[in-house]
Length: 161
Image (tube, rainbow, N blue to C red):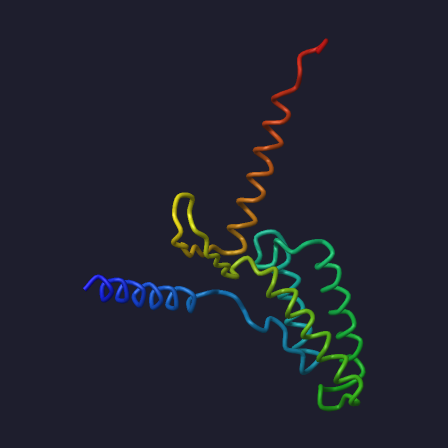
């Protein structure tokens, strides 16, 4: 009987977790470059989303620079051709590689990306799975760092010590 209840709870948890994960706002392929006009519109959306308040606002400066560089490479490739199908094979490969690199960086830095970890709480051997968005994790890290900095500044030794 105990095993059946435990199994039922585990199945219900997995179903609820799957339903929650399915509602994620993460865009799997933020960029699909097929034509210059379509690429220009998508690149503009990406630039907007990298601004404060956007889905990619937490992107690290090095990643942002890499995205900007690869978007520029893609722009140059598409400017000389009407569509992706007009590109020579080598340029198609370069375009696909740049697109996948940009998509990978953006997916990794998406504030809505769900991150789950399984840890055993102190005093227990049974792991508990917790899920938070990348944005929530970064916000918590930022506030923790600020609190530690404030604490360090408040513990300034009195003069003469």
